[in-house]
Length: 124
Image (cartoon, rainbow, N blue to C red; front, side, top):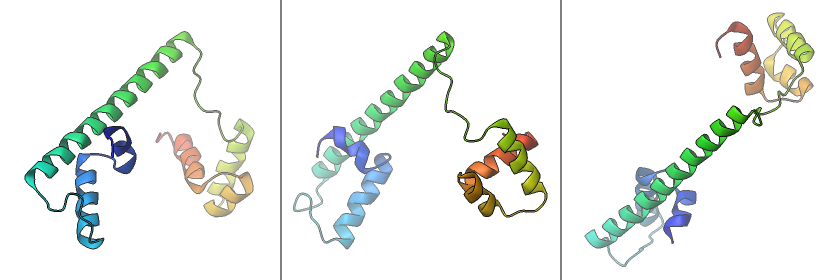
């Protein structure tokens, strides 16, 4: 497995170690024939490089978005609801309608319903 693909296997180095340990114990798998210190070192180094590479990618992405915002070409994601729909959603939620029913009717997730309600309350 190359370092380039390790970031797809695990979120970070600790997650990678935990995954390998789980596969070794529960799956009766042996990656090197024995759990040698050298194998552990190599896995850690490869995992660290994958984690570092992922961090660099995310940093470049944030920088690119910031530059695009400064140029005025990045507006973000389009809102799921129009202002009128959001107003009706808030009114109906305040009247006690179930959030899951509202989500289904407006074609959005329950989390999006809660996001609109939090935004209206000034909580984010």
